[in-house]
Amino acid sequence: MRIVFYGTPDFAVTSLERILEAGFNLVAVVTAPDKPSGRGMKLKSSPVKECAVKHGIPVLQPQNLKSDEFEEQLKSLDPDLQVIIAFRMLPEKVWNFPEKGTVNLHASLLPQYRGAAPINRAIINGETETGVTTFFLKHEIDTGDLLLQKKVTINPDDTAGTLHDKLMNVGADLMVETLRGIVSNTLEPVPQKDILNLKTAPKIFPKDCEINWYTEGLKIKNLIRGLSPYPGAYTHHQNKILKIYSCRFEKGTPLKAGDFEKTNSSTLRISCMDGYIYPEWVQPEGKRKMNVLDYLNGLK
Image 1 (cartoon, rainbow, N blue to C red):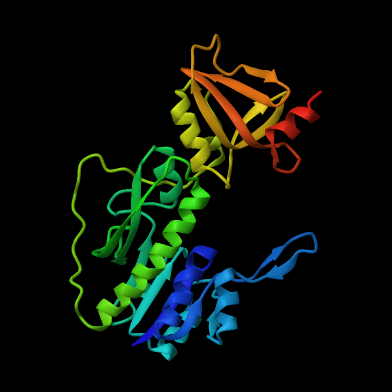
Image 2 (image 1 turned 90 degrees about the vertical axis):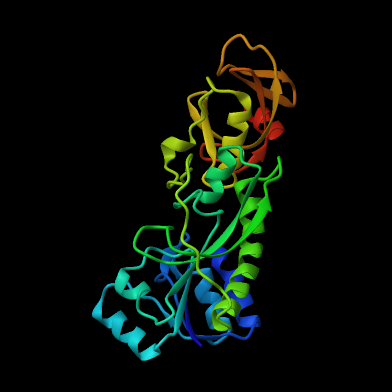
């Protein structure tokens, strides 16, 4: 079976490596165009491109997925199946091109958390369980027929970063299992059910990252975990932005939400609705990430 793989970030690289290790016939990889990066603004390849080049797989980097040029390239590749992981939206004429269709890997247990930020949103909402899903693409985003799912536990100390890595590895194995099932015709696609209390995972914007101290402490802690290490939850201290990457929460009866208090030489606490948030790792505006002790030592 001739397979074309679509992906860009590290999340997709692990699946690409596992698919190659399993012996599938990847005829090409499609990824984002190289972008200027760093102080010298030198062109930088995506992690998926670097992986493909290492393994000697042809790489396509179309600027426009709807172009006639890219359509001709697909025709010449003659794929039976396409795999898409962490890539931009495909036009219908692309995802509907192969006879066997296009399979996607999503970092949630669909239909829950459809959207661009399922890992962040699951932690922000205080979930204790999530997972990965493989499914066939169709018109509406993340609504295609389900193939396989695997549950993953969210631990109390998980961040978006640690959960990303867990789902990346579990998802890679699930994708290999899915491809084997498609090749052997042993998988039966199942339409997604309409369920009540459907939770979505819209893209994270800067306004979503600001901490509201007039909120319960556990919700604030979940927001901080769900935005760590990127893009980072933030507040304002001494008229500057302060990002908080990790913290602990202690119940109490504060006088006023949002008050900053240095309780000793190494501890900072911030009042919330039902107690105190104790930041552990922070990043002051214009400076590096640091532990809270270094931050306190640098305060005027």
